[in-house]
Length: 145
Figure 1 (cartoon, rainbow, N blue to C red):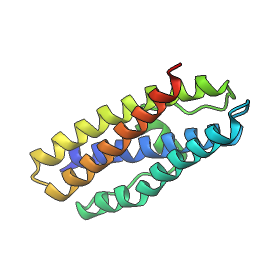
Figure 2: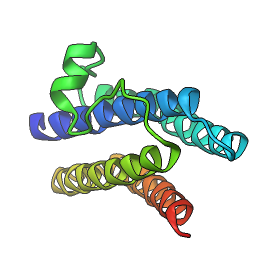
Figure 3: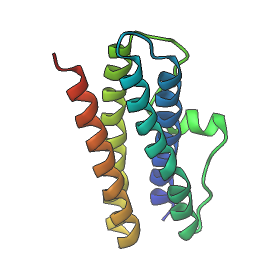
């Protein structure tokens, strides 16, 4: 079960990092399409941030400890933080890459949940997978000319 707790903490860390990065981009996006990008990124960070508590609660249901200190988040997430303001489309492209990371880590966690017959956790992870896939689709569509 420790393996599943570790995988869920990775999902939790990815959610924190993705939420923080998309929130940072939401604040700092500029350009002629500012209102659209600002709202779009706001919707994304809010959706992902809204999942953090439930992910932590699933960790608790299997007697784990959810990690949330900044150092633990940095250590557990494959999504890299940023403090660099970029042009809007570079921000979007960066988030496309990050959704792929999140999806891969969700798949690993789903496989582990299935291994331990944690059906509720697996179902929840499938919902998160679908949410990230939708974010990826919308982000990629924004990059098309």
